[in-house]
Image (cartoon, rainbow, N blue to C red; front, side, top):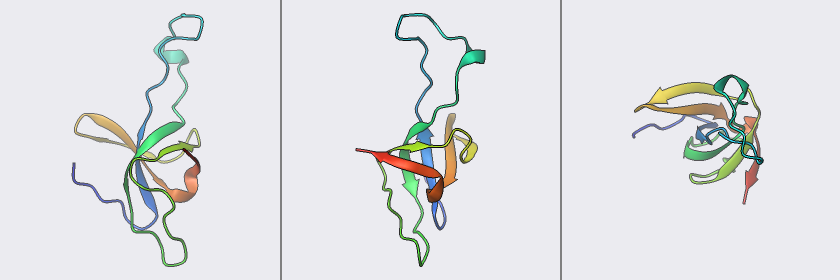
Amino acid sequence: MNIKPLADRVLVEPKEAEMKTAGGLYIPDTAKEKPSQGVVIAVGSGKKDEPMEVKCGDIVLFGKYAGNEVQLEDKKYLIMKQSDIMAIIG
């Protein structure tokens, strides 16, 4: 895949929603929550006054409704601003 986000944008592959509960019950598609965790696939170059803090491969937490969904090569991704990312899981 050849995509380069601009400025302070980040391309994130969201983690799939859980299919089962801890007790073993299957969750129907209508009851699944949007994922709020994912892996950074590509990052922009940043802004003059705001350098990029995330890098490719970071696992990040973001808001439930953060970013815009895009589909590339039959996979769904989110493009969001770096400021929409709440934390890096390390």
